[in-house]
Length: 254
Ligand SMILES: *[C@@H]1O[C@H](CO)[C@@H](O)[C@H](O)[C@H]1NC(C)=O
Ligand SMILES: *[C@@H]1O[C@H](CO)[C@@H](O)[C@H](O)[C@H]1NC(C)=O
Image (tube, rainbow, N blue to C red; front, side):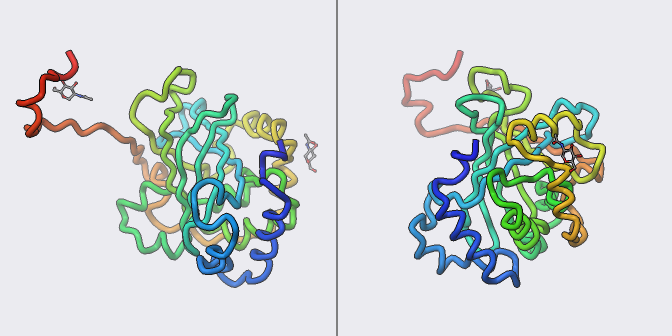
């Protein structure tokens, strides 16, 4: 498992050095100007600097605890206030591409309007609970990244392979908004144990190692389900008249 985590130990070392150098501000330790000079640049997934495993649930109440997803995130740095991650399921080989997660700093989140904020979830509990892990990273490195980079960030996560279609041959249906857990007693404990088995991690110990991390209060709007809003997407289907419809021999689906 560890072998897939990073392409080389060198990247871990670079990350560690960068993250250790300047712990003053969130992600400001990896400004774009420095990144641009790094071999992986600012391109696609080959720029992955973080591998995270964590849990998502489909936006809505917890009544159906089946709707828990163990998600592997491969994250690149877009700017000093934003990461972007491709998210894979853990249950399939090859892993299904589950969706994407954008991660922004607290300051960035504070600029969003109230309705936009409702599409985002907080990360503070994911960090302090030990649910969000970095398989393969040494504990001190993990601690630094969690405390100085991730704990006060917010994520917007959209799964293109819906949970209720997880066994389907193809990723059918409308993408869905997913959220992160915010409190003990929400996730099924066995689900965490299964994850730990898979990665050889111990969430109890990881949680202990992060006891000194004190998150800021979650800003209003995030984790919208706690206000009683279950947000989901739908298709907007408008009747329109296109120029080609009259000249085309295609009649559309029967
Ligand atoms: C995880 O760590 C805790 C605390 O150190 C320990 O009690 C528990 O047995 C460990 N679990 C496993 C599966 O090793
Ligand atoms: C959009 O609406 C048209 C007309 O009712 C219908 O024939 C078509 O199947 C709809 N498409 C979708 C994706 O709902």
